[in-house]
Image (cartoon, rainbow, N blue to C red; front, side):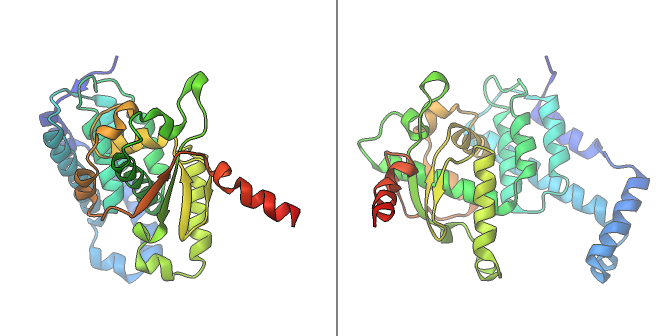
Length: 281
């Protein structure tokens, strides 16, 4: 059983931790000078340490806010804290910091002293900022649409159930502009980049099937709901998904609620009639 660590100790650990040796920092500095050119000199010799401290402090500050907002009083696992702080050192994007801080805050929820958040820290480190924004937009849009629909009361069908009862999840329809930046949309090869990002979310089982890009239909999954709840720091299990206020979740990331519709059927069912018509024509 891993030893728990308190919120006060998290701050002390962050100040004391330095996982990179002087030689490794020197090597990294040379490599990034090659990548950044003159900009690296402007940053100065201590740029790496400065970036790590700033990024780690940002994740910790966000985690503390989420702990206080949700009223968590338990202690986080030392393994989870160490893993999250290591992942946060170069997390220079706000959405990445939001997700890492949420996993850390969830570890301080009741019963959070187990280290189950480790799998999510590792997954977040594998995902791009675009993938994380897409994931957040998909699930907060599904949450808003589901809460507005009086016919939806049990969250399990949203992702098709689990274990022996696992089926195909509900589908959310939303616009990619809700999470894609203007610069990304104007970038050459944008559609390929977006398709690659969504395909990556499918491989991680954070979404099911998807159709379309600018206007997309995306199938929900159990893991997708679970990561969303970790990201906002609730520590809740997926069965309590519909208890979440989407407005409060959106305030954390500064995103407007995407206009969306939720459809009580999988993607392949929605598009099956069109596929059948095209095959006979």
